[in-house]
Image (cartoon, rainbow, N blue to C red):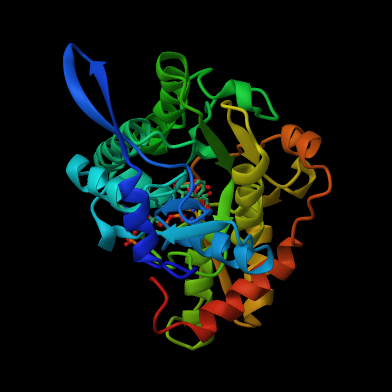
Length: 357
Ligand code: NAP
Ligand code: GDP
Protein backbone atom coordinates (compact mmCIF):
# COMPACT_ATOMS: atom_id res chain seq x y z
CA UNK A 1 0.00 0.00 0.00
CA UNK A 2 1.20 3.49 -0.82
CA UNK A 3 0.01 6.36 1.35
CA UNK A 4 1.17 9.62 -0.26
CA UNK A 5 0.12 11.88 2.61
CA UNK A 6 1.58 11.09 6.06
CA UNK A 7 -0.29 8.21 7.60
CA UNK A 8 -1.23 9.30 11.11
CA UNK A 9 -1.80 6.16 13.12
CA UNK A 10 -2.73 8.17 16.20
CA UNK A 11 -5.52 9.96 14.40
CA UNK A 12 -6.91 6.66 13.22
CA UNK A 13 -6.93 5.46 16.83
CA UNK A 14 -8.69 8.66 17.89
CA UNK A 15 -11.24 8.18 15.16
CA UNK A 16 -11.72 4.65 16.39
CA UNK A 17 -12.76 6.03 19.78
CA UNK A 18 -15.58 7.86 18.05
CA UNK A 19 -16.77 4.70 16.42
CA UNK A 20 -20.47 4.19 16.81
CA UNK A 21 -21.89 0.74 16.82
CA UNK A 22 -25.25 0.56 15.21
CA UNK A 23 -27.45 -2.43 14.89
CA UNK A 24 -29.24 -3.27 11.70
CA UNK A 25 -31.50 -6.04 10.58
CA UNK A 26 -30.34 -7.74 7.42
CA UNK A 27 -31.81 -10.84 5.86
CA UNK A 28 -33.57 -11.72 9.10
CA UNK A 29 -30.50 -11.65 11.33
CA UNK A 30 -29.06 -8.93 13.51
CA UNK A 31 -25.61 -7.78 12.47
CA UNK A 32 -23.24 -5.21 13.92
CA UNK A 33 -22.62 -2.31 11.57
CA UNK A 34 -19.69 -0.05 12.33
CA UNK A 35 -20.11 3.61 11.43
CA UNK A 36 -16.99 5.72 11.27
CA UNK A 37 -16.64 9.48 11.22
CA UNK A 38 -16.69 11.01 7.72
CA UNK A 39 -13.26 12.52 8.26
CA UNK A 40 -10.06 11.56 10.07
CA UNK A 41 -8.16 14.55 11.44
CA UNK A 42 -10.42 16.77 9.36
CA UNK A 43 -9.43 14.97 6.16
CA UNK A 44 -11.59 12.79 3.99
CA UNK A 45 -10.03 9.40 3.30
CA UNK A 46 -10.04 8.40 -0.35
CA UNK A 47 -9.23 4.71 -0.84
CA UNK A 48 -8.30 3.51 -4.34
CA UNK A 49 -8.63 -0.22 -4.97
CA UNK A 50 -6.27 -1.34 -7.74
CA UNK A 51 -4.25 1.80 -7.04
CA UNK A 52 -1.00 0.25 -8.28
CA UNK A 53 -2.29 -0.16 -11.84
CA UNK A 54 -2.46 2.01 -14.96
CA UNK A 55 -5.39 4.17 -13.82
CA UNK A 56 -3.99 4.42 -10.29
CA UNK A 57 -0.75 5.81 -11.78
CA UNK A 58 -2.83 8.34 -13.72
CA UNK A 59 -4.63 9.46 -10.55
CA UNK A 60 -1.31 9.85 -8.72
CA UNK A 61 0.00 12.00 -11.58
CA UNK A 62 -3.17 14.12 -11.52
CA UNK A 63 -2.93 14.51 -7.73
CA UNK A 64 0.58 15.90 -8.05
CA UNK A 65 -0.88 18.67 -10.25
CA UNK A 66 -4.06 19.16 -8.22
CA UNK A 67 -3.47 18.26 -4.56
CA UNK A 68 -6.05 18.92 -1.86
CA UNK A 69 -4.82 19.19 1.73
CA UNK A 70 -8.23 18.01 2.99
CA UNK A 71 -7.85 14.58 1.38
CA UNK A 72 -5.80 11.61 2.55
CA UNK A 73 -5.29 9.15 -0.30
CA UNK A 74 -4.66 5.44 0.15
CA UNK A 75 -3.60 3.49 -2.95
CA UNK A 76 -4.07 -0.28 -2.56
CA UNK A 77 -2.51 -3.11 -4.53
CA UNK A 78 -3.17 -6.85 -4.37
CA UNK A 79 -0.44 -7.01 -1.72
CA UNK A 80 -2.90 -5.32 0.68
CA UNK A 81 -5.33 -8.22 0.29
CA UNK A 82 -7.07 -10.32 -2.33
CA UNK A 83 -10.33 -8.51 -3.04
CA UNK A 84 -11.92 -11.77 -4.19
CA UNK A 85 -11.91 -12.73 -0.50
CA UNK A 86 -14.74 -11.09 1.45
CA UNK A 87 -12.94 -11.20 4.82
CA UNK A 88 -9.83 -9.59 3.31
CA UNK A 89 -12.00 -6.77 1.96
CA UNK A 90 -13.74 -6.29 5.31
CA UNK A 91 -10.35 -5.94 6.98
CA UNK A 92 -9.26 -3.35 4.42
CA UNK A 93 -12.36 -1.24 5.09
CA UNK A 94 -11.93 -1.64 8.86
CA UNK A 95 -8.31 -0.52 8.60
CA UNK A 96 -8.69 2.50 6.33
CA UNK A 97 -12.25 3.65 7.09
CA UNK A 98 -12.63 5.36 3.73
CA UNK A 99 -14.95 8.28 3.16
CA UNK A 100 -14.73 7.75 -0.60
CA UNK A 101 -13.75 4.63 -2.53
CA UNK A 102 -12.50 4.68 -6.10
CA UNK A 103 -12.81 1.08 -7.19
CA UNK A 104 -10.39 0.25 -10.00
CA UNK A 105 -9.20 -3.25 -9.04
CA UNK A 106 -10.13 -5.81 -11.64
CA UNK A 107 -8.79 -8.60 -13.77
CA UNK A 108 -7.91 -6.48 -16.81
CA UNK A 109 -6.53 -7.45 -20.20
CA UNK A 110 -6.56 -6.80 -23.91
CA UNK A 111 -8.62 -8.51 -26.59
CA UNK A 112 -6.56 -11.71 -26.70
CA UNK A 113 -6.50 -12.24 -22.90
CA UNK A 114 -10.26 -11.66 -22.81
CA UNK A 115 -10.80 -14.25 -25.55
CA UNK A 116 -8.66 -16.83 -23.72
CA UNK A 117 -9.75 -16.45 -20.08
CA UNK A 118 -13.48 -15.69 -20.20
CA UNK A 119 -14.24 -17.69 -17.07
CA UNK A 120 -11.54 -16.02 -14.98
CA UNK A 121 -12.58 -12.56 -16.22
CA UNK A 122 -16.14 -13.28 -15.07
CA UNK A 123 -15.36 -14.98 -11.75
CA UNK A 124 -12.59 -12.68 -10.50
CA UNK A 125 -14.43 -9.50 -11.40
CA UNK A 126 -17.79 -10.59 -10.01
CA UNK A 127 -16.16 -11.62 -6.71
CA UNK A 128 -14.08 -8.43 -6.43
CA UNK A 129 -17.02 -6.15 -7.25
CA UNK A 130 -19.47 -7.94 -4.96
CA UNK A 131 -17.09 -7.67 -2.00
CA UNK A 132 -16.06 -4.06 -2.61
CA UNK A 133 -19.70 -2.95 -2.93
CA UNK A 134 -21.04 -4.98 0.00
CA UNK A 135 -18.43 -3.69 2.45
CA UNK A 136 -18.74 -0.14 1.12
CA UNK A 137 -22.39 -0.33 2.13
CA UNK A 138 -21.58 -1.87 5.53
CA UNK A 139 -18.95 0.78 6.27
CA UNK A 140 -21.16 3.66 5.14
CA UNK A 141 -18.88 4.90 2.40
CA UNK A 142 -20.11 8.32 1.28
CA UNK A 143 -19.45 7.71 -2.41
CA UNK A 144 -18.21 4.64 -4.29
CA UNK A 145 -16.99 5.19 -7.84
CA UNK A 146 -16.50 1.98 -9.81
CA UNK A 147 -14.94 1.59 -13.21
CA UNK A 148 -16.80 0.21 -16.23
CA UNK A 149 -15.52 0.30 -19.81
CA UNK A 150 -16.89 1.14 -23.26
CA UNK A 151 -16.06 -2.44 -24.29
CA UNK A 152 -19.02 -3.73 -22.22
CA UNK A 153 -21.61 -2.05 -24.49
CA UNK A 154 -23.68 -4.04 -27.01
CA UNK A 155 -21.86 -5.26 -30.08
CA UNK A 156 -24.79 -4.52 -32.36
CA UNK A 157 -25.79 -0.96 -31.62
CA UNK A 158 -26.29 2.48 -33.08
CA UNK A 159 -23.50 5.03 -32.70
CA UNK A 160 -22.41 6.95 -30.81
CA UNK A 161 -22.88 4.88 -27.67
CA UNK A 162 -24.14 6.81 -24.66
CA UNK A 163 -24.58 6.09 -20.95
CA UNK A 164 -28.17 4.82 -21.38
CA UNK A 165 -27.25 1.98 -23.75
CA UNK A 166 -25.18 -0.41 -21.61
CA UNK A 167 -27.82 -3.16 -21.41
CA UNK A 168 -29.36 -2.85 -24.88
CA UNK A 169 -28.01 -6.13 -26.26
CA UNK A 170 -25.23 -8.73 -25.86
CA UNK A 171 -21.62 -7.54 -25.77
CA UNK A 172 -19.07 -8.67 -28.37
CA UNK A 173 -18.44 -12.41 -27.89
CA UNK A 174 -14.69 -11.84 -27.43
CA UNK A 175 -15.11 -10.36 -23.94
CA UNK A 176 -18.41 -11.74 -22.65
CA UNK A 177 -16.95 -12.76 -19.27
CA UNK A 178 -15.52 -9.31 -18.51
CA UNK A 179 -18.43 -7.38 -20.01
CA UNK A 180 -21.22 -9.12 -18.11
CA UNK A 181 -19.27 -8.90 -14.83
CA UNK A 182 -18.79 -5.15 -15.37
CA UNK A 183 -22.42 -4.62 -16.42
CA UNK A 184 -23.54 -6.00 -13.07
CA UNK A 185 -21.82 -3.07 -11.33
CA UNK A 186 -24.26 -0.74 -13.06
CA UNK A 187 -27.21 -2.94 -12.03
CA UNK A 188 -25.99 -3.08 -8.42
CA UNK A 189 -25.31 0.66 -8.23
CA UNK A 190 -29.03 1.21 -8.75
CA UNK A 191 -29.96 -1.67 -6.42
CA UNK A 192 -27.79 -0.36 -3.54
CA UNK A 193 -29.18 3.11 -4.14
CA UNK A 194 -32.81 2.01 -4.12
CA UNK A 195 -32.55 -0.47 -1.22
CA UNK A 196 -30.02 1.24 1.06
CA UNK A 197 -29.72 4.82 -0.24
CA UNK A 198 -26.03 4.30 -1.09
CA UNK A 199 -24.34 6.75 -3.44
CA UNK A 200 -22.63 4.26 -5.73
CA UNK A 201 -21.77 5.45 -9.23
CA UNK A 202 -19.51 4.51 -12.13
CA UNK A 203 -17.20 5.93 -14.75
CA UNK A 204 -16.93 4.49 -18.25
CA UNK A 205 -13.51 5.05 -19.82
CA UNK A 206 -12.51 4.02 -23.32
CA UNK A 207 -9.21 2.23 -24.10
CA UNK A 208 -6.62 3.60 -21.61
CA UNK A 209 -2.83 3.84 -21.99
CA UNK A 210 0.09 5.60 -20.36
CA UNK A 211 2.98 5.17 -17.91
CA UNK A 212 2.41 2.24 -15.54
CA UNK A 213 0.49 0.17 -18.13
CA UNK A 214 0.80 -3.58 -18.53
CA UNK A 215 3.14 -3.97 -21.53
CA UNK A 216 2.59 -7.73 -21.84
CA UNK A 217 2.55 -8.67 -25.53
CA UNK A 218 0.19 -11.58 -25.02
CA UNK A 219 -2.19 -10.19 -22.39
CA UNK A 220 -2.01 -6.38 -22.58
CA UNK A 221 -4.07 -3.85 -24.50
CA UNK A 222 -3.16 -2.75 -28.00
CA UNK A 223 -0.99 0.33 -27.37
CA UNK A 224 1.28 -1.13 -24.67
CA UNK A 225 1.49 -4.38 -26.67
CA UNK A 226 2.47 -2.48 -29.81
CA UNK A 227 5.01 -0.35 -27.91
CA UNK A 228 6.66 -3.49 -26.55
CA UNK A 229 6.78 -5.18 -29.97
CA UNK A 230 8.05 -2.02 -31.64
CA UNK A 231 10.82 -1.59 -29.08
CA UNK A 232 11.94 -5.21 -29.54
CA UNK A 233 12.03 -4.66 -33.33
CA UNK A 234 13.95 -1.43 -32.89
CA UNK A 235 16.52 -3.21 -30.71
CA UNK A 236 16.87 -5.88 -33.42
CA UNK A 237 15.48 -8.60 -31.15
CA UNK A 238 12.76 -9.33 -33.75
CA UNK A 239 12.91 -8.96 -37.57
CA UNK A 240 9.91 -6.68 -37.93
CA UNK A 241 7.17 -4.79 -36.07
CA UNK A 242 3.97 -6.85 -36.30
CA UNK A 243 0.50 -5.37 -35.86
CA UNK A 244 -2.15 -7.98 -35.11
CA UNK A 245 -5.35 -8.04 -37.17
CA UNK A 246 -6.17 -5.86 -40.17
CA UNK A 247 -5.50 -2.49 -38.53
CA UNK A 248 -8.94 -1.23 -39.63
CA UNK A 249 -10.85 -1.32 -36.30
CA UNK A 250 -11.45 2.06 -34.65
CA UNK A 251 -10.77 3.05 -31.06
CA UNK A 252 -10.93 6.11 -28.82
CA UNK A 253 -7.89 6.18 -26.55
CA UNK A 254 -7.55 8.11 -23.31
CA UNK A 255 -4.23 8.97 -21.66
CA UNK A 256 -4.12 7.73 -18.05
CA UNK A 257 -3.04 11.16 -16.75
CA UNK A 258 -6.12 12.76 -18.38
CA UNK A 259 -8.31 10.01 -16.96
CA UNK A 260 -6.70 10.58 -13.53
CA UNK A 261 -7.66 14.26 -13.67
CA UNK A 262 -11.22 13.32 -14.65
CA UNK A 263 -11.45 10.80 -11.81
CA UNK A 264 -10.51 13.58 -9.35
CA UNK A 265 -13.28 15.71 -10.84
CA UNK A 266 -15.81 12.86 -10.52
CA UNK A 267 -14.76 12.24 -6.91
CA UNK A 268 -14.94 15.90 -5.97
CA UNK A 269 -17.88 17.11 -8.06
CA UNK A 270 -19.99 14.43 -9.77
CA UNK A 271 -22.98 13.54 -7.56
CA UNK A 272 -25.11 11.38 -9.90
CA UNK A 273 -25.54 7.59 -9.46
CA UNK A 274 -25.83 7.06 -13.21
CA UNK A 275 -22.64 6.25 -15.18
CA UNK A 276 -20.60 8.86 -16.98
CA UNK A 277 -18.50 8.14 -20.09
CA UNK A 278 -14.97 9.55 -19.81
CA UNK A 279 -13.74 9.75 -23.37
CA UNK A 280 -12.15 11.93 -25.99
CA UNK A 281 -14.57 13.12 -28.67
CA UNK A 282 -15.90 11.02 -31.54
CA UNK A 283 -13.72 13.08 -33.87
CA UNK A 284 -10.63 11.75 -32.04
CA UNK A 285 -11.34 8.10 -32.85
CA UNK A 286 -8.37 6.52 -34.68
CA UNK A 287 -7.79 3.28 -36.56
CA UNK A 288 -5.49 0.63 -35.07
CA UNK A 289 -3.21 1.28 -38.05
CA UNK A 290 -2.98 4.99 -37.17
CA UNK A 291 -2.39 4.13 -33.52
CA UNK A 292 0.43 1.78 -34.57
CA UNK A 293 1.95 4.53 -36.73
CA UNK A 294 1.90 6.88 -33.70
CA UNK A 295 3.88 4.18 -31.85
CA UNK A 296 6.35 3.90 -34.76
CA UNK A 297 6.88 7.66 -34.54
CA UNK A 298 7.04 7.68 -30.73
CA UNK A 299 9.66 4.91 -30.76
CA UNK A 300 11.53 6.49 -33.72
CA UNK A 301 11.38 3.07 -35.40
CA UNK A 302 12.46 2.88 -39.04
CA UNK A 303 12.35 -0.87 -39.79
CA UNK A 304 9.72 -3.04 -41.55
CA UNK A 305 6.08 -3.15 -40.41
CA UNK A 306 3.68 -6.05 -41.09
CA UNK A 307 0.01 -6.84 -40.37
CA UNK A 308 -0.76 -10.37 -39.15
CA UNK A 309 -4.29 -10.78 -40.45
CA UNK A 310 -4.57 -14.31 -39.03
CA UNK A 311 -5.20 -12.61 -35.66
CA UNK A 312 -8.69 -11.47 -34.63
CA UNK A 313 -9.78 -7.84 -35.05
CA UNK A 314 -12.25 -8.03 -32.16
CA UNK A 315 -15.10 -5.51 -32.07
CA UNK A 316 -14.87 -3.16 -35.06
CA UNK A 317 -15.69 -0.02 -33.10
CA UNK A 318 -17.24 1.21 -29.86
CA UNK A 319 -17.59 4.90 -30.71
CA UNK A 320 -18.70 6.65 -27.54
CA UNK A 321 -20.24 10.06 -27.00
CA UNK A 322 -18.65 12.33 -24.41
CA UNK A 323 -21.58 14.80 -24.58
CA UNK A 324 -22.47 14.28 -20.90
CA UNK A 325 -18.88 14.94 -19.83
CA UNK A 326 -18.68 18.00 -22.09
CA UNK A 327 -21.94 19.35 -20.66
CA UNK A 328 -20.80 18.96 -17.03
CA UNK A 329 -17.09 19.74 -17.47
CA UNK A 330 -16.85 21.82 -20.65
CA UNK A 331 -13.34 23.17 -20.12
CA UNK A 332 -11.45 19.88 -19.82
CA UNK A 333 -8.50 19.66 -22.22
CA UNK A 334 -7.27 16.23 -23.38
CA UNK A 335 -3.59 15.67 -24.11
CA UNK A 336 -3.09 15.32 -27.90
CA UNK A 337 -2.89 11.62 -28.81
CA UNK A 338 0.51 11.73 -30.56
CA UNK A 339 2.05 13.60 -27.63
CA UNK A 340 0.64 11.12 -25.07
CA UNK A 341 1.86 8.14 -27.14
CA UNK A 342 5.34 9.66 -27.44
CA UNK A 343 5.51 10.31 -23.66
CA UNK A 344 4.42 6.73 -22.95
CA UNK A 345 7.00 5.31 -25.39
CA UNK A 346 9.64 7.40 -23.63
CA UNK A 347 8.48 6.17 -20.22
CA UNK A 348 8.53 2.54 -21.38
CA UNK A 349 12.06 2.84 -22.77
CA UNK A 350 13.29 4.46 -19.56
CA UNK A 351 11.54 1.95 -17.31
CA UNK A 352 11.94 -1.15 -19.46
CA UNK A 353 13.55 -3.29 -16.73
CA UNK A 354 10.86 -2.67 -14.11
CA UNK A 355 7.74 -2.09 -16.25
CA UNK A 356 5.02 -4.77 -16.13
CA UNK A 357 5.43 -6.84 -19.25
P1 NAP B 1 -4.30 -2.72 -14.20
O1 NAP B 1 -3.22 -1.77 -14.60
O2 NAP B 1 -4.24 -4.12 -14.70
O3 NAP B 1 -4.34 -2.74 -12.61
C1 NAP B 1 -5.21 -3.63 -11.95
C2 NAP B 1 -5.17 -3.30 -10.49
O4 NAP B 1 -6.07 -4.19 -9.81
C3 NAP B 1 -3.80 -3.50 -9.86
O5 NAP B 1 -3.63 -2.52 -8.85
C4 NAP B 1 -3.91 -4.89 -9.25
O6 NAP B 1 -3.04 -5.08 -8.15
C5 NAP B 1 -5.36 -4.86 -8.79
N1 NAP B 1 -5.95 -6.18 -8.62
C6 NAP B 1 -6.20 -7.09 -9.59
N2 NAP B 1 -6.74 -8.21 -9.06
C7 NAP B 1 -6.82 -7.98 -7.72
C8 NAP B 1 -7.28 -8.76 -6.63
N3 NAP B 1 -7.80 -9.99 -6.80
N4 NAP B 1 -7.21 -8.24 -5.38
C9 NAP B 1 -6.69 -7.00 -5.20
N5 NAP B 1 -6.27 -6.20 -6.19
C10 NAP B 1 -6.32 -6.70 -7.44
O7 NAP B 1 -5.72 -2.15 -14.57
P2 NAP B 1 -6.13 -0.69 -15.08
O8 NAP B 1 -5.90 -0.68 -16.55
O9 NAP B 1 -5.54 0.34 -14.19
O10 NAP B 1 -7.70 -0.76 -14.87
C11 NAP B 1 -8.35 -0.05 -13.83
C12 NAP B 1 -9.85 -0.13 -14.08
O11 NAP B 1 -10.14 0.47 -15.34
C13 NAP B 1 -10.38 -1.56 -14.14
O12 NAP B 1 -11.58 -1.62 -13.44
C14 NAP B 1 -10.60 -1.80 -15.62
O13 NAP B 1 -11.61 -2.74 -15.85
C15 NAP B 1 -10.97 -0.42 -16.10
N6 NAP B 1 -10.70 -0.15 -17.53
C16 NAP B 1 -9.44 -0.36 -18.04
C17 NAP B 1 -9.22 -0.07 -19.39
C18 NAP B 1 -7.84 -0.21 -20.02
O14 NAP B 1 -7.72 0.05 -21.23
N7 NAP B 1 -6.82 -0.56 -19.27
C19 NAP B 1 -10.26 0.41 -20.20
C20 NAP B 1 -11.51 0.62 -19.62
C21 NAP B 1 -11.71 0.33 -18.28
P3 NAP B 1 -1.48 -5.53 -8.42
O15 NAP B 1 -0.78 -4.35 -9.04
O16 NAP B 1 -0.97 -5.84 -7.06
O17 NAP B 1 -1.57 -6.71 -9.33
P1 GDP C 1 -10.16 -3.74 -27.12
O1 GDP C 1 -9.99 -2.30 -27.48
O2 GDP C 1 -10.93 -3.94 -25.87
O3 GDP C 1 -10.71 -4.55 -28.26
O4 GDP C 1 -8.75 -4.38 -26.77
P2 GDP C 1 -7.27 -4.10 -27.23
O5 GDP C 1 -6.74 -2.90 -26.56
O6 GDP C 1 -6.57 -5.39 -26.97
O7 GDP C 1 -7.31 -3.77 -28.78
C1 GDP C 1 -7.63 -4.78 -29.69
C2 GDP C 1 -7.51 -4.28 -31.12
O8 GDP C 1 -6.14 -3.93 -31.40
C3 GDP C 1 -7.89 -5.36 -32.11
O9 GDP C 1 -8.42 -4.79 -33.27
C4 GDP C 1 -6.54 -6.02 -32.39
O10 GDP C 1 -6.53 -6.72 -33.62
C5 GDP C 1 -5.65 -4.79 -32.44
N1 GDP C 1 -4.22 -5.08 -32.15
C6 GDP C 1 -3.18 -4.92 -33.05
N2 GDP C 1 -2.03 -5.29 -32.51
C7 GDP C 1 -2.29 -5.64 -31.21
C8 GDP C 1 -1.48 -6.08 -30.15
O11 GDP C 1 -0.28 -6.22 -30.23
N3 GDP C 1 -2.12 -6.35 -28.96
C9 GDP C 1 -3.46 -6.20 -28.81
N4 GDP C 1 -4.02 -6.44 -27.62
N5 GDP C 1 -4.27 -5.80 -29.81
C10 GDP C 1 -3.70 -5.52 -31.01
